[in-house]
Length: 178
Image (cartoon, rainbow, N blue to C red):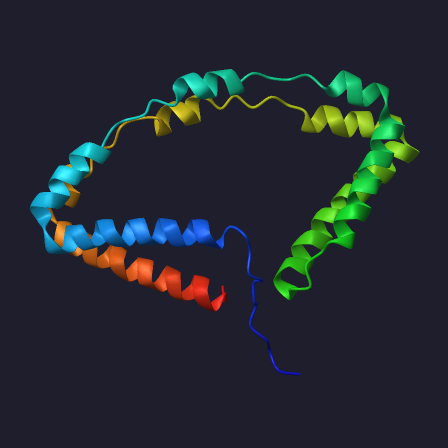
């Protein structure tokens, strides 16, 4: 049996990807052809957006343990039903099968544990329900890194690299081979 390439079916989101590729292609062409225009474009698009107010709202623990732990068996049934529905829609591509099967096996084991032994499920839930504070990681990543000067100085090389990446992405998108 010959090895087949993974072919992705035409999706409704494809037009969005083409619009994005067109915009990136135009910007990289400007960078390639006119560094002065690219510098002006870079100053317009180089606005810093502080994301900390959004993450502060999301970075609060939600305690659903009591709700789930009081209703272990219905939760186990929901896990098993969800696993069955997901398995009904497993893509036929070989690359996805193993990932989905491993994930579904874990969900089925947890669902069966919730049905068969609520006490063990409670122990597992308490072990897995440890709150991880992400503030330190977000604070390190939420800093302005000014690469505009470097990109503007080397706009032709930047434009060439981005244009090549755009063409390659367009090729893979059009041929639907990933």
